Image 1 (spheres, one colour):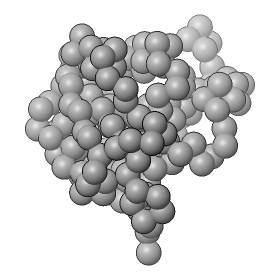
Image 2: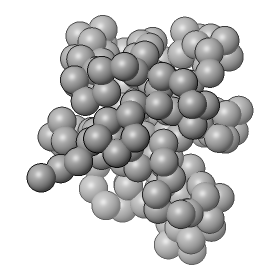
Image 3: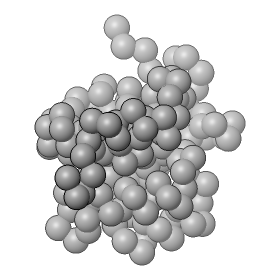
Length: 159
């Protein structure tokens, strides 16, 4: 039996208030579907949606967000660039990347600072668990430690 965050402490974020999750995707239908899945697991959460680019950055600048989820492969934005931008500007916000790529790509994304990595064929339970782990930091590793660990495994852009 999978235990949800609601069962072990409620859908409260680190701020002690209702958890706020930002979903960034270039497709409104995908954003809405993910929002419904998040709300199914965390009914008291506030889910914000934004397309990549200025709208997503505006939400991050004006709202205290507990975690952000986004696809790295979007026709209108470079997901790795978005990850880098969000991580550098809001290093304390856990970023969960959703992708169809293999383990090598997952290592690269985690090395860039993502708090979580989900495959696009993940189950709703996987999504719930990824949010729970990212917000609670139950792995005990800071994003800087993860980047340092993976930097020896993932080659830089020049090699």
